[in-house]
Length: 179
Ligand SMILES: [Fe+2]
Image 1 (tube, protein in one colour):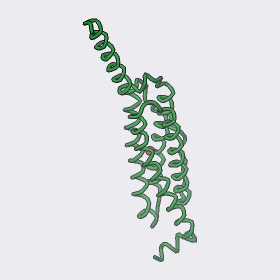
Image 2 (image 1 turned 60 degrees about the vertical axis):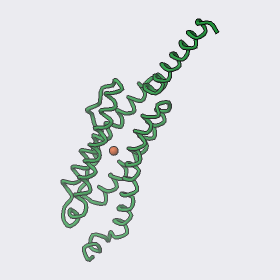
Image 3 (image 1 turned 90 degrees about the horizontal axis):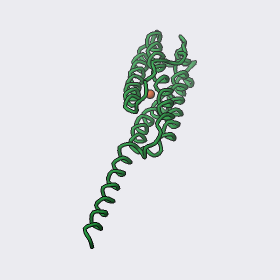
Image 4 (image 1 turned 30 degrees about the vertical axis):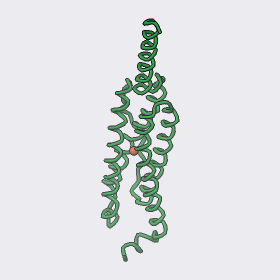
């Protein structure tokens, strides 16, 4: 009941509060170097998407242009949006965002362009899942990555359906022209 006891309770309470703040703010003081490396892998993948989908939007021709040019350009914009989020996050964590990208898959054939898109989205899902694994211990970072992961999975689902339709109709180019 002495004042010393009260002081030490107060002291303990302050220490707990500071530790709690550190936990919330910094994700258990975790080492972010592996996360930053993985986020840079993701950033390079997103830069690849910006170039690959843009080019697909440029080169698609004929009646398919009406159907797919907008989709490819929309996906390029989505990749840029993700790159922006990830680049900002890397900088916030103290890393240097990459300006590199991976080789771009190119084709003049719409079916192949869709397959490259599906391959790209599937790889994105894989990378975001890997980053999530590395982010355990930082809940906020996990939620941030999950939000993007969901959009990547939506991309896989959407393009999977397009590839399937395009294959089934792909004596297709003519079938689709007819209606
Ligand atoms: Fe993305």
